[in-house]
Image (tube, rainbow, N blue to C red; front, side):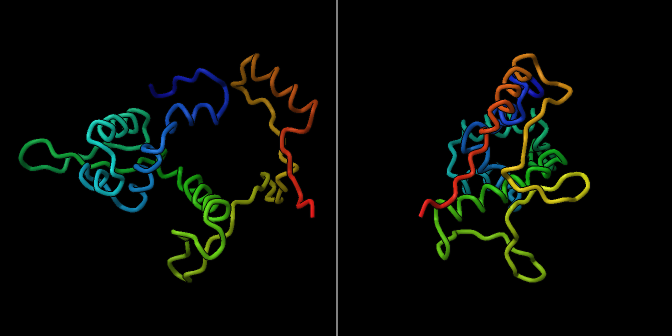
Length: 172
């Protein structure tokens, strides 16, 4: 399953791994410190068969690694790999989006804050390689070295229209 892509698109590739809520909840719990099957089950409510399937897929895709912890018999814990730890900005951005658009100010269930200052993190912003901030309406998809002919065709359409990101201002 790992590295098998049916589309040359980063979002599609991620959805091949993270296409359901259980997988994201397991990654969330790993960031919160869970490492054992029973912890993941208790904290997510996933059934044993779903949990077994998703943990296996996360290991197979290099997001989690299995860690043998038992002295008698096979006892396994799960830890985030470097690839898994790289998901932290994605998880924080998803939480911030939900806090803003699903819960609203003053009703956020979980805030990410600095452990040193207690102050909340800023929302995700975009910078180019010269560290210049790029407004979202100035983002533009371009083909990468692995782009398929279908991706090249689609990006030509998008960039011809230049309406791929519709930043809507408040009409009032």
